[in-house]
Amino acid sequence: MSINHIRPWRHIERRKSRQIHVGNVPVGGDAPIAVQTMTNTPTTDVAATVEQVQAAAEAGADIVRVSVPDEASSRALKEIVRESPVPIVADIHFHYKRGIEAAEAGAACLRINPGNIGDEKRVAEVIRAAKDHNCSIRIGVNAGSLEKHLLDKYGEPCPEAMVESGLDHIRILQDHDFHEFKISVKASDVFMSAAAYQQLAEATDAPIHLGITEAGGFVSGTIKSAIGLGQLLWMGIGDTLRVSLSADPVEEVKVGFEILKSLGLRHRGVNIISCPSCARQGFDVIKTVEALEKRLEHVKTPMSLSIIGCVVNGPGEALMTDVGFTGGGAGSGMVYLAGKASHKMSNAQMVDHIVEEVEKKAAQLDAEAAAAE
Image (cartoon, rainbow, N blue to C red; front, side, top):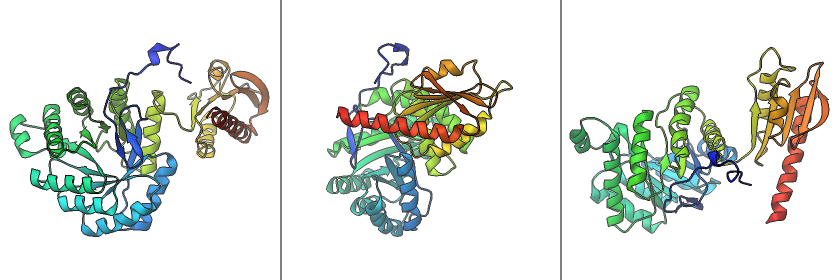
């Protein structure tokens, strides 16, 4: 249940956008913000790519993108699409024919880069293939591959050049009576990306795909993405997102969901509230949280769990969570259920016990949700 009516400072007014579909996933309008990732296996290695797609889907990915750089990848894509549990976006660069082949292979969406896909005639052929095979299209503008005439005009990559590139290609799609498209204006620079997306949001009602491209490794990329995407989402901008990390695609999905969960825009799995630990802790908070994160990965039901090392903030945090544990010293702590102190539990048994309580609460919430349908 939304609590924004009693806590208005948590309310986010999402930008009103058109809704399109990527396969069976709605994007834009009042649809949940979709989380995407991209495989990094050779597309021609069908088994490895499908395994990565399935792992990403299990982690919560709504959509997965696969690069299609050559004809062999186009052929492999058909089998990948057939075995994928989620819609597949074909990433197309340089050769427009790959876009046509990907549409024929069953891709749910074609990602084309205006800076290197070719002239309008070639784009028109890709549009025709998308229409024929019920594909949507993402216009993927990237600061690192802008068209030469825009670089000549603006002197360097900038928000204005990125938005102009995107709007030019929106016009091409609309001139060919194609409207099932979304758009992104990515840069590795957080400031440039944020400014471009804000300008884009005012210039079109198309669904917007968010991303900070080439954000970096797991830690630095997560921080840059959280800052860049977080502020845009807080402003109500964004209908789908990908966190670009030099890391396992599953980690991209996890970070994407954590960003959305922190803003109350998506809810999936256990949200663990935990303290950084200090000399007051009654148990090893860090190791406990690490163990619980792994043990609770299978729980998809949205719920909250507080793990606090001492009684300074523990009882207060537990009031706000479904399940809680607060260290009390003497080798045990207090278990809280639905915000109320329930019973004591030894530190030695706490992890197993908390997992049991979370699973029990998840089953209860699932049953209540089913009964309400």
